[in-house]
Amino acid sequence: MNDSGLRHIAIVTSTRADWGLLAPVAKALRERDDVRLSIIATNMHLDASRGMTVNEIEADGFRPAVLLPLMHETDSEVDTAVAMGRHLGDMAKVLAELRPDILLLLGDRFEMLAVASAAMMLHVPVAHISGGEITLGAIDDNIRHAISKLSSLHFATTEQHRRRLIAMGEEPDNVVNTGALGVWNMNHAPVMSREELERSIGFSLDGRVLLVTYHPATNDAESPAVRFKALLDALDRHADCRVIITYPNNDPNSASIIAMIEDYARRREGDVLAVPSLGALRYRSALHYVAAVVGNSSSGVVEVPSARVPVVDIGIRQMGRTASEAVIHCADDVDSIDVAITFALSPQGREKAKSTPNPYQHDDTVSLIVDRLLSVDPATLLPKRFYDVEML
Image (cartoon, rainbow, N blue to C red; front, side, top):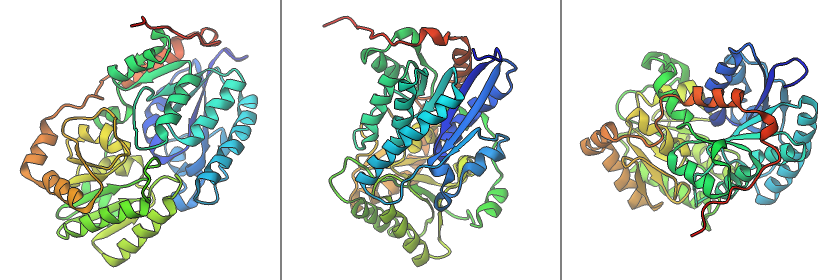
């Protein structure tokens, strides 16, 4: 506890996606009279080219305690590594000033590895959401496991992921299967009516609409532009479908994808909407009105199946991640994507999406996370001990 006698929880959020997941936890903590909550907003939240999504945090009624820009000016792997180093130093200064009892973060992005490293150096216990997962097609996989080893408290999204964290040497008592926050949102958070959403985005949802998000697969030897061109060519084979395409994250080589998105929207003006970020509410709402979700985002694999919407997962980026049997995995060539979209739009594809359970489902996700954050004694989280599983 800090000097006020309140449990000080700091939440770090860096993208539209992680805030959409973390918001219900932040709201639940805000309602507690025994908690001091600090929101640290960084990276894409402060990037005007990607929607300046810090506005979403403020729209949810939060005033971030810290706004920390991430200097990430070009589009190369070297620049990303340099940005990580700068961010580690900047975050160390922030944490030295805030001194939270527990730092909560989610996922597997490069800036979060810098955040967790800074917390380790300052002896701030880290609670990590979504450890134990596997995505072999991206460097995120390595980053996620590294963050897990820098963290002392874990909120796993499935029982398999919980077991995997324990196999990595994490204390079983500090690894909780909570289910996925995105799935909890699908079942509990409000959505916009179709008319409200159409007015908000300036795009009609008449007919069949595909919602597309594609990120660079950072472990792929092929150029992301080549892979994304195949997706656009496959979409052209479904000219009867209208398309909403959101920008990728600011991973290396994302700029080429953004340029292609803008060119494609101009070429199919009126039938294609390019948007830097839908935001959590509009994205969640859109899932009620689109015919299918297409791309390679984790959202498509983890949470969209709970909306009972067909999902086409392209290429290697999510390879190895636990997924509903309704998710349609395909290679990243034009013909394979075309076939997968065709099945997603078929009566069989729609019925499979409606009837197949989601392994990430858990009704008590938010309360499980909040209760453990407030019941655990931070003094027991550091120093970490390695838990040896029974040797084979």
